[in-house]
Length: 116
Image 1 (tube, helix red, strand yellow):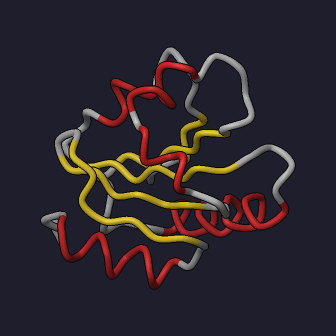
Image 2 (cartoon, one colour; image 1 turned 30 degrees about the horizontal axis):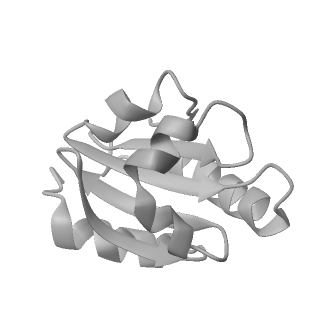
């Protein structure tokens, strides 16, 4: 069983360097982000297929994320949240605006070798 890691300035870089990682970008006051967080947690509680993938959430309105924002200038183009990205070995492979487990799984299947 996987869990959704709450990332911060100390943990985001190591997380993104994982062999496979899903990053959800949100804000602490975003209702759609909170709903997507709950949907992800429910999915992860029952999932057995994606146990080798790390799942994390980064709240962009939390302090101390200057380095993350500076190293990811594409963030300036993100106008709406939540925004979800799939990373493989530190490289952005897929991304989408909004939520949806089916959308996420479709994107993961395209770029991550599933052991199942």
